[in-house]
Amino acid sequence: MSYLCLSNRVWRSILLVSMQFFCIAAWSQNVVVTGVVMNEQNVRIANAEIKLGAANVKSNSKGTFILSISKLPAQMNVKHPLYKEYIEVLRAPIRYGDTLKLEIILEGKETELEEVTINASKIIWAYDKKNTHIIDFALHDQEMLLVCKEDHKYFLRRLDSIGKKIVDVQVKKGPLSLYRDCTGGTHLVYADSIFEIKFIRNSIGMLSGDSYEKTMKVLSPCVISSPDNIILKRLGPHNKLVEYVKVDWNTKKPSQLYITSDQMMMRQLDEYAAANNIPVALSNPNYARTTVINNSTDRQRWQNQQFYNQILKKPLYAPIFEINDSVYVFDHFKDSAMVYSRSGKHIRSFQFSYHYFENWKGELFLNVEKTKLYAKYEIDGLVTLRQINPSTGKVVTTDILEKHIHPINIQIRGSFAYYIYKHYLDNSIHYLYKQPLKE
Image 1 (tube, one colour):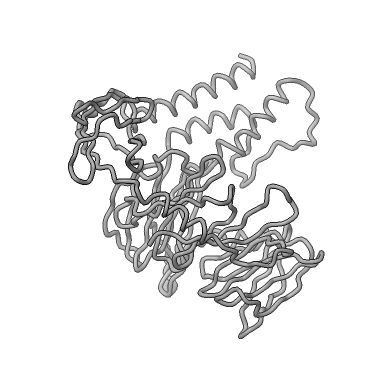
Image 2 (tube, rainbow, N blue to C red):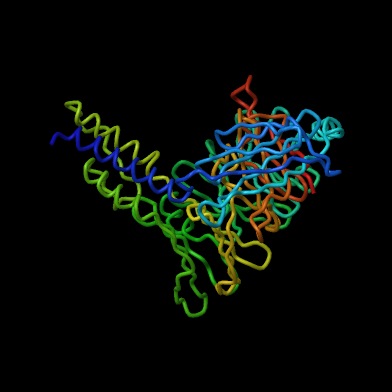
């Protein structure tokens, strides 16, 4: 068998197994969905447009509808000219063959234009120096730290609660970003080095730098630190295994907190890696571009290795957060969240489905206060933030960052979302804005 045939066979096998697994997880037979659409006064609404996955119907004169769908969970959209759009994720019934019966309540939209106008007018500069290029920023309690550039010079700039400069520290050319470690420490990142930043009264101090690669090997595994223990993250073969280990500060004894893996994909990627000479034991496997590529087989093998590194090797998304007094693992591979005490005792589990809303960007993040959880969605450059109740996985509020497309590094503090905006007419400068969010 030729190499190319083997490669194609392996890739088809991966796709087939993935499709089979998805169908098992998302139901492989049609589910009948019936429902009635009403307003807040329980008046039935005719001619409402219902879209569920690829299925589209309209409610009849009695406000009822019926449709059939083969894959759940899926996003449901219900539209009517006189009402606000209803958006929800519909999960599969508990038993095969069950009919899903829905009662959909649409809210009036008479104040929607007014609300949009008010919110748009409140999108303001978080730092209003228009000749300052914002490279990155970090929110600290009520203060803010900027990495910025002015007049070809680079600075760390500390701001107070109202955005007034406290102090500037000039830094060497070429800073890339700020990095926050699990203990809350902040670091200034360069391509080859990293420097820890200290807040000293009304000034900024920087410790001597170290190798970026060496430092991140120490810092990056730690995801949560508390007075009693730390929680470390480990990725397994092909990044399709995620494990969290709790280490007691006093005894130094490790214990497994949570583990999840996609065993089917791991087996298929083992075969794919073997066929393409991918050294999966390495943290960053790469087919050396300096290697002489003599024929189409070598070229195909190199392309397959790049595809592995950039697409197939993407880790399972199961982030961990410390929210209020508990630790949460949101396992998006299993659609389930696990809740633990700070000591590592399992409290409960629950299912969630917010990641089945369309255009989810595969990202969750906390506010600065570590009390609220947000999921990020994006369509045509506009970002939607859905606040997720960490106790139930349900959507609490929805906000659209309406004024600027492709905002960078969104952070939330209090009732505001802060973000960097790159102006589409000027590639040389980034600005910092904030927008109010629904309470």
